[in-house]
Length: 101
Image 1 (cartoon, rainbow, N blue to C red):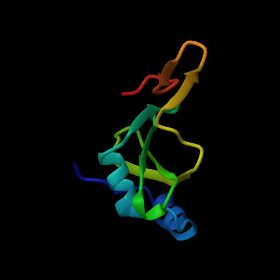
Image 2 (cartoon, rainbow, N blue to C red; image 1 turned 45 degrees about the vertical axis):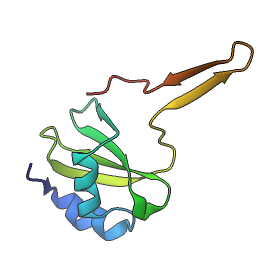
Image 3 (cartoon, rainbow, N blue to C red; image 1 turned 30 degrees about the vertical axis):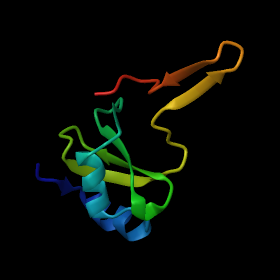
């Protein structure tokens, strides 16, 4: 898939944020660990980036899913939540609170 970027992404996001690079955003969009549709029909993609040494990168595209509009490191992102109940020796895995596409 060919990826494009918005003028805002090119002129503002890449210039201001050292944690966002075009090639990383493309990698996240091509191989996400989670995808969500926003209310404004844009798409959120998350994936870990080894070069960031910890946080995942969130890339946001337009409705076409191939035009990158925004990106930033997301330290609060968890691909899944684990909840261990010692009394029943049960592990519950919550993959996402929202529907993933």
